[in-house]
Image (cartoon, rainbow, N blue to C red):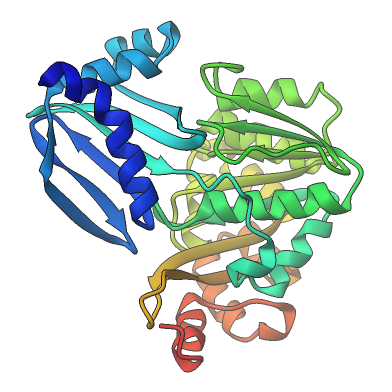
Length: 336
């Protein structure tokens, strides 16, 4: 039976993907399959799989590079395609054994108008240089927003887009722009090395899947300063936390210079959350937006980031909005 079930994990994934509006599937050794639908976990006791089943599934889907990486690091991020649908896969080991979390990737890139994105964020697609940061907790839709903005640029500008992702999620076909997508482990060894290489590849726009260390942040600021538009994502909540996170990756002796560079390069910080719709039909995003105007540039330089929320509350005419206000607006319009 385990032999058959190992071969049927693909079919179980296909079944639940087709029959539910899920975002994630959880496959754990000797545990029922579970999904996340509309933000909530739902478990299906009739569909248990064993560790052996999962190992067979992984053997079918992982190439030798990723199999070796999983063995050495005991965890893995990659992408898997099942019946034409892409999933972002995280493989790990727990007390019970092998586990796989699959996040469904919507292959159709949504238009920015479909995502409730504020006009001040849409206008960032016209920037020629600088740093745009999309932030929020895991599962808040950062990748979707980034893809929608990049798609808007792809449809409206004639430039060169290079992405560095872990893993590649949305597939961008060259439209008015030419697009090269690179994935960690397959096409590039790291974000920082990929970004440094990208600067020699005649880019106009660079998308970074994540900015997580000193080398990547430093290279991103340099790229933004030297005439490129850089889109990056961080797992942070709010503009002040995002700015502090970027500065804190630098040694203390370099932080004054980093604040100066960031004040000149930063264009926009977007923080987003997803909320269950009032009618139960899905989820809707709320967006906090900080536009880096001269007042905020001064606060970054002077290490007074804690004062940024006050500026945001009084600068709505410039397209800024706090998260509390964004959520209040969703409630006022009956969406949540």
